[in-house]
Image (cartoon, rainbow, N blue to C red; front, side, top):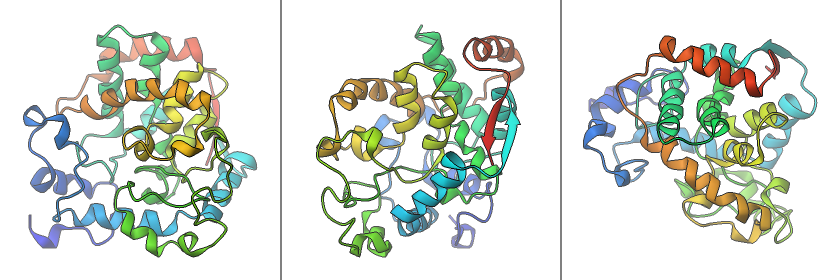
Length: 292
């Protein structure tokens, strides 16, 4: 890859990822094995490192509380949109943190949901595939991508060295704060992930939008699908309760559809739209209040 094409700041453009994926990151998907996905060890991946440097430096406990107040607890501005409006809105976004595919987020959602549908899963599971990343509209509301996409992790306690690029947590002031840099930090052992503050991003935002409308396994998959240090690396066991252990198989069941259904061949949205419109209408009201 031409070094001049490596973005010095991955947040300058939503489309910067495309050249990197095409030229460096991965071969064509049909030649990829599962172990080829999410490979963060390639030293040529400078823009990924920069993305996570910004993420790990700035995702503090205080930052998460600020975002929760703005978008969940006391939103100042709300935009009335349907789920379909959100899907159309997301069609303009390419995720800077995703090295596996350069299609828009709409295409990623369709590929995940269609793969779930092809295996005959429950309709709410199919719908979860379609909407699990809809919280990424935060980028289009003006939020920087490092505060929306990428892996999530607990704040308010010690950062695990199994999180991608753990060295960048040395830049995070919480790593030197005695309130937050111990194993449990502000939490109690076995408190349950529902009582843990995760790094801010699209997962938590979409969970709160959907929490009154979908079954608990669907909500759990939406809320924690980016928490790879837990469901892939087996970290943070000491924070779990029985409910988390009961829900973990659902997250693991969903994960392959999120990661390995990616393909350069886009599904045809206009052909699929009637099916998904009916499915959305079954579970969601005509409009939701999206905190913007």
